[in-house]
Length: 414
Ligand SMILES: *Cc1c(COP(=O)(O)O)cnc(C)c1O
Image (tube, rainbow, N blue to C red; front, top):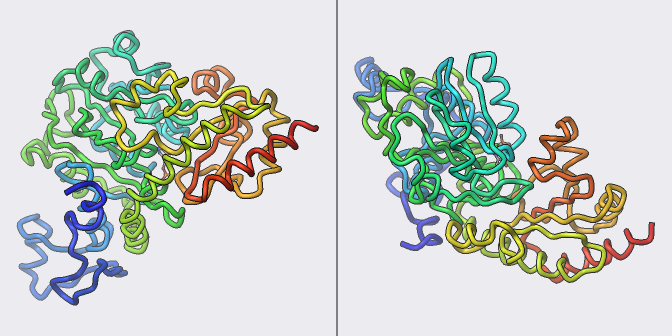
């Protein structure tokens, strides 16, 4: 099956066996009753498959999880209430006091905030300005347990060379290689096949597509070997073999932390997922057209998009990404004032701190997402005073290009 067919048919039969419903219904229930005490006991001891309480599992959520697993080619997926809940739960499942994380300095602000929270539990993060083996080499220590990076960083729009990092880490059983695939989506990059051990998504973004529900996922390749000395937190779970991580995330972390995805939001995500391929095709081609048009427009100092030959990450993007270069681009307009004036004059693009919507979105990162970030960290993340970030939607791109042209023309006259 190719990707668009897989989106609809892989690991999915709606409710065909029971009612013929073409979609998995919303099982809006907290608990699941069973006819005998023995039956419920068996479920609690994981001897029988079944549902007991929605914090740990729910058929609507399970259907969404299975579809993500099929897309990513992993052994299993656990869905969470948000992308941040997914990343937090993953850290809580595998790390212990004394461990170190190595992360790309351009990772999502919420992730940096979380890694900062982990300090009080004795887990320290070292940031690298780029994810090249030579740079990683300088900060990786015997205590490093996780390398964390995004496939497409934002707003720097650097592209992670997953196979190169895999080759550098080799088959280490003491460093887990985690990739945040949010901006690439499973359509543009098959992270696990490329060499990541675990892939996380904020499915609030492209997977959902219409910005109507917050959610996150963790998908495991099942190939990490969980050296028990390096990962004492995973020792008891090794007996589950390739299912060690998904078992612990579901049976322990979801149970204890409770950041579960609601059935309604799982349903909305499953609907979104069905059109992910079509939307990405359109959004990526729109983004490329807009980036190329902006390069020719007066008053634009620089355009950054991995699909442009001028991007330092174009070559990496060509061998890591398939079917497009993502749908985020940035432009520099010289000054903060011109950036503000430009944003204020756009007719269609919504001024919002979000990405991955079907609508085109813009934001001035320095005064919003990076408002409380130190100048040095902003420099590492590629955030300048004149930078505008665009998340390109599915509109007819001629309309968006025209709108950007008029906004540029008028922001010149201030
Ligand atoms: C939005 C985002 C997150 C956090 O996800 P939420 O669903 O908002 O909690 C994590 N990583 C990346 C790359 C994101 O864009």
